[in-house]
Image (cartoon, rainbow, N blue to C red; front, side):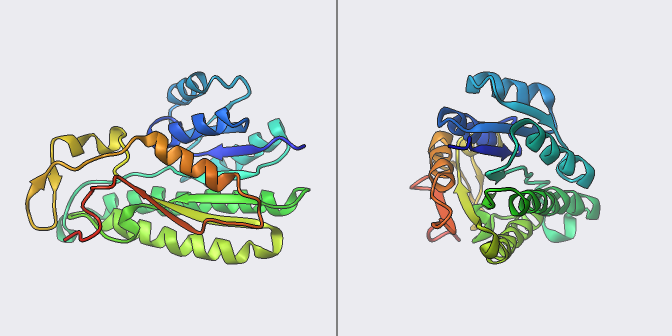
Length: 248
């Protein structure tokens, strides 16, 4: 049986770290990508996976992304899974207050970075033998409904949904499956403000419930370990009582 190999971006903290640890616990060979080498090394240590490969990577750089997948293939021979997770919320602002450079930075990481990693993974999965693999994009609740003052983040996450659909369609002839996980209020560094209150659509500031990030990781692993003949096209995993159903 071939060893399963996963590339996880944004693996130095939060959801990426939790998913990398969960996959390692399931016997996956994991390639950890992110900007901060020390944080990636800590993820590897916490995973207890001596076979983890740490590759500091700026996913907005096409050369760096190609080098990431080149390193994965050189070490493990193939890529079976990409968890496309790297992203940023960007500054909170209404559209008229949003600086163009800030907009471009969010688009570059959340959308172009996702595309570049998907492109490199797709290319490898199409060429390798046995052919195929799976791409799981990290969407967001904001791929469905925005938070106040989040135009850049919301626009990119809606675009990721379109990319997911295109990848899923284009991958069919090559046994490449693509799905998306839309996550709401997983307890990470990024959602720490939830405990002190965040702006709501009606102008209030309210505390929002969160969920254990391990529940997200288990969902990603379930999606990842399906046979390639089956696919979770879209999954929404959220804190049960968060203001999403009926938001606004």
